[in-house]
Amino acid sequence: MGTAQPVKTRHFVEIMDSTLRDGEQTSGVSFLPHEKLVIARMLLKELNVDRIEVASARVSEANEMP
Image (cartoon, rainbow, N blue to C red; front, side, top):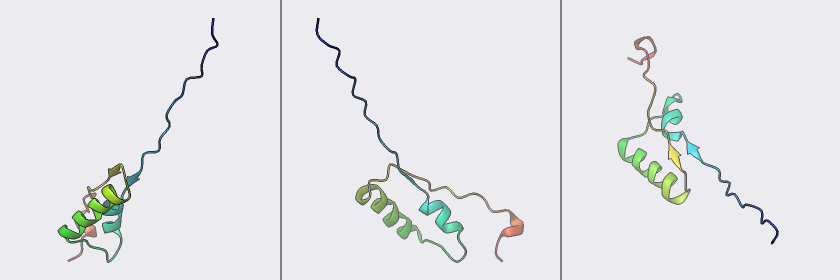
């Protein structure tokens, strides 16, 4: 009988970026649609981000700017 070989497991880190969600919630920050696309493509292709949060929480009417 041979000796048992250790099982190799692959560990990975999943990167999730919230620039497009949290970034626009910062006072004075607003992205145009084409800017959002450029940011998303860069995050996915150049930085190898696994997941992007893009939805924004709905702001209550009391907090909306006129």
